[in-house]
Image (cartoon, rainbow, N blue to C red; front, side, top):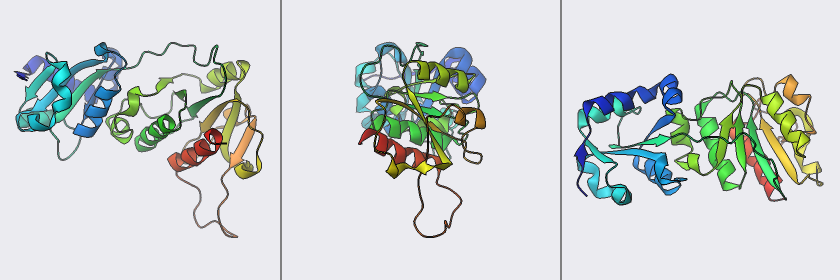
Length: 263
């Protein structure tokens, strides 16, 4: 496969994708690393979702996954890798992809069992990416992000979900409360992770369609969201007294997803 050198103009445009405002205005995002970029390519919703693959000259031997995309594959120098990279040791493989376009009617006409994940101001990008990947593993239908949740196309989110960002529908909303109200009118029950809730092991009669809301790392579920909840659930600790304040948000999400899906 013959690689064409990336132009300086396109390099400047791609480097701008480090900033959220440019990602949003262009509808694009930048991914880095062999595993992440390869998995994104494996999950492309269509051929137009990939804009460009950028490969350092000495990495061509490991980039076999790029062969079907000839014409969209460009070579980059070590210096250009340093400009594109958001890690301390660039791997020399980058991808520029188009963001998902939400259809705005998630959950409508959904038949049978369904699980949607809602993130209520989850601010750590690593948590957002890990929850997204876990949701893919457990077969969730979608993930909703409040306005205060970390950007889904942040480089750390993309790395944390290891390229599974195309494997699940996800979208952001200005008002999570309004979106949850809409889904509840469609027959979804709202399940909130909360330290004030009932031991999740005690509940055996689960609704068929559910939204699982995961709250902010420090504050938990916001009161306005909690007020809509059909179920408040907590994950109990072992022993008479907890030795830590709470579980990590992504760990809580994984435990509850496993119970809701494999019930």
